[in-house]
Length: 190
Image 1: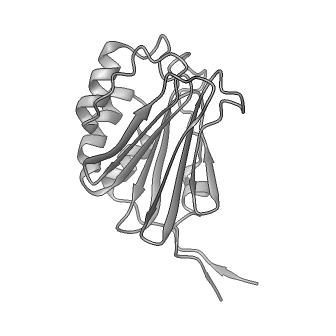
Image 2: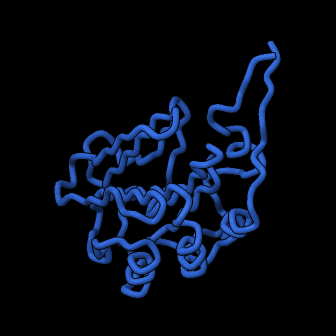
C-alpha cells in the first residue's frame, strides 16, 4: 500500500518559531502567531521551577492573554488553550495527585490535552493527542502550535523550568520528520 503524504509549507513566521530557543523571543513570536493559530500549553512535572521567574510569568501572560500566574505553582498541572487570540481554556489545580485534561473538536480533528504534576499517582506525563497521534512532553511548559486553517502542527516547544538542558537545541520533535508527517486530514491512499 502506498501513501501520499503532504508536507506543510510553513510560513516565515512559523519557521521562525521552529528555530527559536529563547523563551522571551518565543513569547514575542507567539504574540503574532496567536491571531490565526491554535496554541496549546501543558505543564509536565512542574511548571514552576527555579528557571521560571516573575519575568517569565509576565511575558507568557502578556503575550498570550493568560490570567494565571504560574510562578508559584510548584508541581501543579496546568493547561491553556488559545484559539485565534482568545483564551478558551486555562486551568491549574492544587490537587497534585490528579491530572488535568481538556478535550475539543476542531475541523475534523479530536484534540486531547493532559497535564500532570510530579506527585500524580498515574505518572507525571503530559501530552497532546490529535486524533490518534501522541506528542509527549518534557518537564516544564510545553507549547504546541497548530495551524487550523491548513490543518498541521507547526511547532512543539519545551521550556524546562528546572534545569538548562545540555543541548540548548533540544526540541521534543524533529520538524523535518515527526511534525511534517502529521498534516492531519491530508494523507490519502493511492
